[in-house]
Amino acid sequence: MNAAAPQLELRRVVKRFGGVAAVDGVTFQVEKGEILGVIGPNGAGKTTLLNCINGVHRLDGGDIRWEGVSITGMAPHRIAKLGIGRTFQIVRPFGSMTVRENAAVGALFGSAAARRGPKEAFEIAEQVLELVGLNDKAAYPVSALTIPDRKRLEVARAVATRPQLLLLDEVMAGLNNVEIDEALEMVRAVHATGVTVLVIEHVMRVIIGLCRRAIVLHFGQVLAEGEPEVVLRDERVIQAYLGERYAKRLRASDGPQDAR
Amino acid sequence: MIARTESSARWKRAFVILGAAVAAYALLAPLTSLDAVQSAGVPLLADRLWFRLATIIAMFVVMATAWNIIGGITGYAAFGNVAFFGIGAYTTGMLIAKAKWPFLLSLPLAPVLSSAFAALIGIPLLRLRGHYFAVASLGVGVAVGELVQNIDYAGQPLFGGATGLFLPIDAIDNRGLFFFYLMCGAAAISIAVTWLVLRSRFGYGLIAIRENEDAAAVIGVNTTAYKVAAFALAAALTGLAGGIFSQWNVFINQENSFPIEYNVQMILMALLGGTGTIFGPAAGAVLLQLLIQFLGGTLPISFEIPFVSETVRPILAQVILGLLLVMVVIFVPRGVIDFFGGRSRLSLSSLRRSLRDTSL
Image (cartoon, rainbow over all chains, first blue to last red; front, side, top):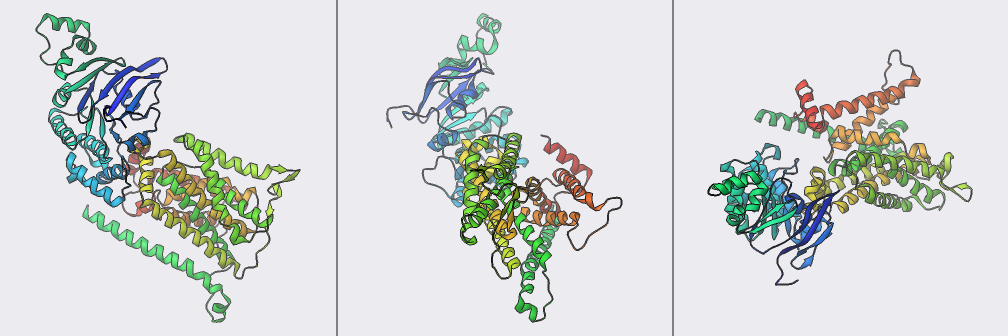
């Protein structure tokens, strides 16, 4: 283990589906303790990138390193044990279980160096549900939860695995403004417990509100990288999102007031 | 809401009492066949037919409960578990008939060999999901039976071939009683194993796999290892039942050790009783086996069906079983335990709801 190495490092990562390179030579680093945003238009390869990091997809090229050690080709459960947790864009709760049990199963497995028994797992579940604001609904069956609450549960289960790095796949998608504010608070609270966060988002407000650094993906490649406010004014980014004509019109006027 | 909770609690209590009464009767009735008890003037409650029926029921309790571990808890619809029953039967049978081992020494090898085989085929098979796994496991179930009947070694059928395998008759006093209690012991072990699994980290991992395998993997469940372990555990218990069956029945062949209809029956029992529960499959096994025997006309209480001759009655029994499977899946997808708990009802709205749920 190399102390100088970044927590997570992607080197020219490639993932192809047939002839399409969904992720095409992506290189970036995640530093310990930051909140890194990954944005990009639909089909840019954001979710595929996440699936590459946590081992759901096998890479067609490149290398992924965790604290300086290659994790390329590892099975998802082994990557989870290393301390990389994730959520799914389309929530995947364990439907027959209660909210509390869902979180407890996360704690029962996950990144444990020491094995936890069911009793400890349920204690951790209580703490995590408190953190994401689901503690008063702990005994509910999953089917009784609203969409925003299901997204919270998705985060709770991932946090209960005690990750060092948490990959969030569009947890804010489909939420209204008030719900987004609450979800932002939740992500900040999780981050405050010492977890590095990588957020994939569509909602610009979220990236600006959370991240000091953002990466823009377009057709599977890194288009821009830097502070969110700066990146979002980048002409290539505006073109990628809104098309060339709109970019020209923006150039003619003052520039984007609100990149959303 | 409160009223419903009260009524379901009442139903639950009634069921526990009924179940305990049936179990107590089944476990105590055989004792009346002992000579000492008979000479004391106690009426005989268990004759030869009773023992035959009760032992078969206990055998199905083992198989349905074992199937529940892979099919109910893990959610992998294994359609070929009868292969493990047959392998267990032939392991014990071969050791006794050919190697002249004593029964109690050869019996432990039945679950060992069955689970080893399950682990071996489970590694490739359990990569398949949904229908693909069901079909592939059915194929294995049929193939193993054919292999056992048709493998020759040096011109001789290795496992007795089409004539089957005759075991030396064991000299055990109160034979019926002995094998009935032995099979009940296997049933108790299966239920205890299910209880332990459902309380363990292993069990939570299996349920997570059933509910969403991808989500289970990313929280750190080694899905392949867990599925193979669940499959092997189910196979071990099924093989144990097969091992007991071989010495009890003294004669084994492809037909009685690899009956394809057992595959459907054990699944139907688990569905009927309630998949994923501890006692559901056992309750389903008792109910369904009694029904099968009743339709087959082997129970003392029988019935006449107009326009149906004796020869087609077994076929009619199969038709009724098929219809029952359809009814169970549509109306009580979570088992009769749930049904009598007041959460499901025989109504058009529940039919519509369950059709909507299952077609998702």
